[in-house]
Image (cartoon, rainbow, N blue to C red; front, side, top):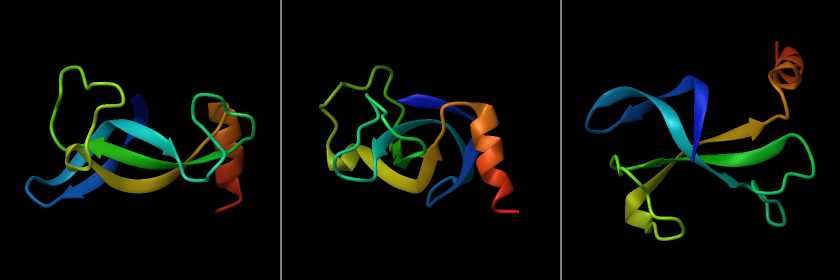
Length: 89
């Protein structure tokens, strides 16, 4: 689980638009992992907990506990992310 800034806006079916600033990240591609990043950017799934668990159990979450929210890219620094964003403008 990581904290992100700025938060992701997410359209929740119950609460409407909410800001997610804490998400779980998981690699989108087989053979890559968030625990040992060898190549940048790292393409990930952003996943939210369906409920606020005070201390989510490691490796013990079921499919009912989580929901995929979006795809994202992780960069080694803010400057690297800004540089990559310029190509989309």
